Length: 69
Image 1 (cartoon, rainbow, N blue to C red):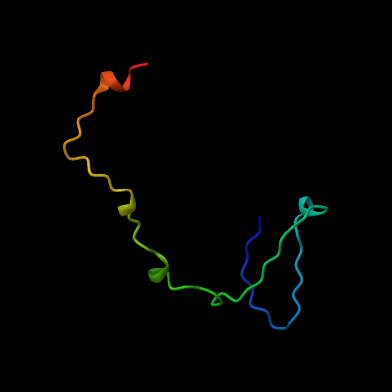
Image 2: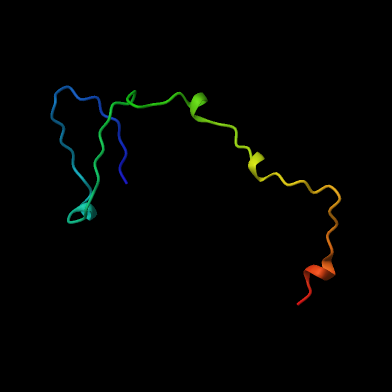
């Protein structure tokens, strides 16, 4: 994998690729560093599992019943 940051001085850019990439399908992505970046503080959300809460008050685990066939 190749990862590099370039500041172009014209609209056309060319670059060499490793010999083992020749004949293979490769993907080239170009975007401005400040394009589409969401503030990381907004992107990170607190993970909660409140939808999976179960009331276990009064529950007693019976190992013998669990292992019955």
